[in-house]
Image 1 (cartoon, rainbow, N blue to C red):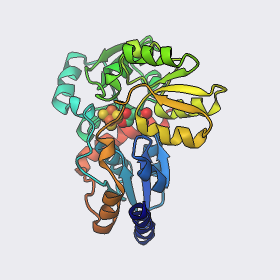
Image 2 (cartoon, protein in one colour):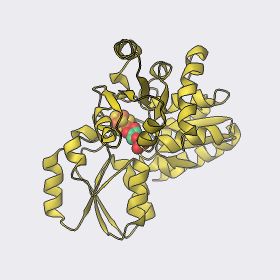
Image 3 (cartoon, rainbow, N blue to C red):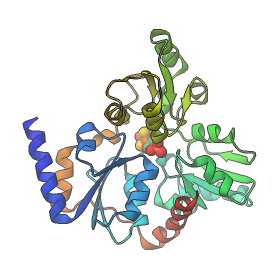
Image 4 (cartoon, rainbow, N blue to C red):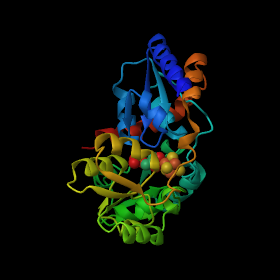
Length: 303
Ligand code: 13P
Ligand code: SF4
């Protein structure tokens, strides 16, 4: 605890020296969310990168998030505490695979989840996150959509649109691990609890949800709900904001395995180190960044 306090003080000092802002995803460790200037889901964090007047962004999340921030704010320095924090789902689609699929469906427009590499975004018409996926799909002027990479979110959104969805076979290792049996056991044990679930979970699990939504939507629902008890079907870092908003409500995660190991790679020591050394920095080759930027900016304009 004493060491944590010292690290936090050092971070405050370095932040001032560097004119830096710390952005943290809701899935980060509590200690990181505590020092963050801004917490959010992947949509809110991308948006924040475009509006902050800091010179340096310390992006506490996974690699594609820092990369998206750099693409949207190319003149800022984007630091990430650990380069090894990747997203296995983002790695499930590459640019060659996407090009091949585009060839098979020449009239389709590509909607890519923000959980993709800059390369894939450069071949994408418009990005989305779980918070705006349905609105983004409806905004596209094509009846045929190539959707990468999350098959579970793809299945979920396909129920809200008449468009033909060509869905890639990727998934989030963390959310996809949750099973119907896990949820049914929790529901039996806590019959008064509402089950809130992220659409990155399997369709049969999502079906059991009393509420289905992105990380931010889940947080908002639980805060505003009259219910007192929740079974949570998303990553366990979300507990930080849930408990902050509603200290008297009870939140139980549906299993102890709802932990994204990549999100937990970051810690306070690494935040200090990256602010001291100004490394590692995100770099995106300008020709890729320019093409990828269009797909992110289109997403930010969808109302
Ligand atoms: P959101 O932040 O859009 O809820 O996405 C969840 C996720 O898995 C991020 O990696
Ligand atoms: Fe990727 Fe899933 Fe981790 Fe999000 S929670 S970073 S989608 S592996």
